[in-house]
Length: 329
Ligand code: XMP
Image 1 (spheres, rainbow, N blue to C red):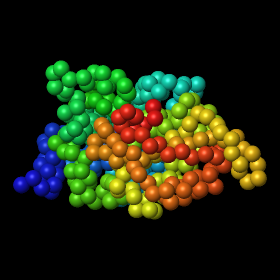
Image 2 (tube, rainbow, N blue to C red):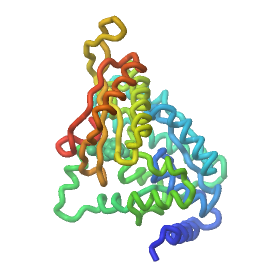
Image 3 (cartoon, helix red, strand yellow):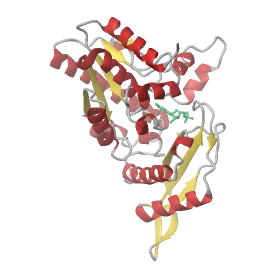
Image 4 (cartoon, protein in one colour):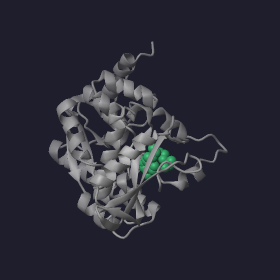
């Protein structure tokens, strides 16, 4: 029968046979559900011949690296190294406003970092790691094999999602994709039976380029990263507190490249505007904006403007996809 316990056993067996007794395997953990569940499964199959790398690209949410590293190590006992490329990444992104250029730069830096990690593992083990774990899901498999005549090419050039299709072939890995047969909700169930914490498997998706596509304009200016992290943390915590997190597919804040006039304290201020977005969706391809109660929006707006000095105006995005996309760039 198609029970998750059977899927788990079957996939563990497949990984064991594929990797054999001596090969080593590496995995890039993104902090998302899919790569984490895939790595946990592979770890069960081959133990510490798995080497995971979590890249802090400088574009992560509030305390993200700290929080996921604690969970990987203390709760899942995964062998994971955190590689911090913040400085390099931000220096490459300085002065860049075009969304597609941002994505290209971020993708390139990530690949560079991963090449280095491959060498690190080789040095540590004396063996060139031959396999790469990826959290590819069934819908990714279908999407990357479009039926003839479909308009996939066009839709892919709207945004170049650098993690779709995975790392480039030149890295010379054979892929291990234990989630290829599963949908997202099944991956969550699989995670649960391997004791991946509940609050982790229920996480909203987060884009590879991170906060860089949620800061319109130059990411390195105006303390935008710091401001956005605080705003996002307040917003997400409120969503959880009001019991709405699991009803929403994705929620996040956006830092806008404009200032508006306000009164903060007794003083006229000229500060930043942030946008809040929350959507419901089944697959991210289409989405509806989430109809929060006015009381919730009022509370969040108060908290943000009271706690984050750099912000004096909060707006809520009431556009569905289409015509908007989920992210603002
Ligand atoms: P859009 O904005 O295209 O988003 O409606 C659809 C889903 O994809 C995520 N997204 C990305 N994920 N790299 C990623 O890994 C990207 O460059 C990227 N852009 C958008 C977005 O968060 C949503 O879940």
